Amino acid sequence: MLNKEIYLDHAATTAVDKRVLNEMLPYFSENYGNASSVYGIARKSKQALDEARERVAKVLNSKPEEIYFTAGGSESDNLAIKGIMHANKRKGNHLITTKIEHPAVLNTCKKLEKEGYEVTYLNVDKDGLISIQELENAIRPTTVLISIMFANNEIGTIQDIEEIGKLARSKGVLFHTDAVQAIGNVRIDVEKMNIDALSLSAHKFYGPKGVGALYVRKGIIFHSVIDGGHQEKGKRAGTENVAGIVGLGKAIELIYDEFDSYNAHLIKLRDLYIKKVEEKIPYVKLNGHRTQRLPGNANFSFEFIEGESLLLMLDIKGIYASSGSACTSGSLDPSHVLLAIGLKHEIAHGSLRTTFGRDNTVQDVDYVVDNLVQIVDRLRQMSPLYEEVLKQNNK
Ligand SMILES: *Cc1c(COP(=O)(O)O)cnc(C)c1O
Image (spheres, rainbow, N blue to C red):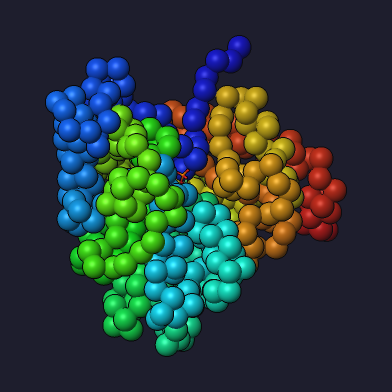
């Protein structure tokens, strides 16, 4: 009866592009040398690392020597925030972030608070945007770092990064951004945007899992968080994941080579989905900024239902989506992001994040919306609250 599978969770991870995989393969069993060694086969690994560094630098408009490879987005966030705060104790102990960051940033900040650092968590408005004025007011003489995500992984809202960078620079405060969701979906220029540090992760743009990068502007001091050998200029010990890094380099090059057509495709699907859901299903709310949002992201709250039930019933139909962030599923607490944009607990619980990708089609959108109409209706039939609302309306 059914063997359709529709993957709508590209913010959680993506499939490795075949062209990326092909470029990685020789670095497992043929060119397996340790890049730190000096003989021929090792030089091939070293060259591969250099090339990947150049590819990443080109996309960000940085210099290759400002790129440090890590084991993913979480590690890059830890390295940027802990690394910069620990190395700049003489300047101060204060850092500013937002209430809607990924746990890789939020829990890093919590850890720093336990060490005695002070953290300001900025509010966001109903669309998920911070206030530049509130940010400016939060800056103290002891503020070392501002860490604000480029684009939110749950609601897709894209911050005014250039404005934040300008303010940080004018106040002499360093600026880190978690750009894990933005890579491939937004054009980034660390010079023009005054970004001092930036985290990215390959598996969010059709590269392999477990490999990421951190850009840190030349001249900024930061400490390592993993100590050992002198790899990555002493900032990240451990024999390099050469195949993974090759994959990251190829994936970031490809996604920006194909930037216009890729993003036009995502925007078409996203907007069609949003339009159809709003037309066909009553009592829904689009979460996140309506226009200043990631091309592939749609996040809706469906009143009177539980997001978890929705996910299970969609799964039965072969539709894979998310109720918030993958990192918090498994817990019954509503998403900290949805609460921060002002949703009530019961509304936040009925939320569904769909993130479109390269292989999704217009037919997928139709199939998903048709199923969603039926499933939402069925779940609402079981809701006493919904029954009340219908009664009220019929009076
Ligand atoms: C996925 C994600 C991360 C974590 O990246 P990993 O490579 O999975 O560690 C960090 N920040 C954001 C915004 C993300 O979406």
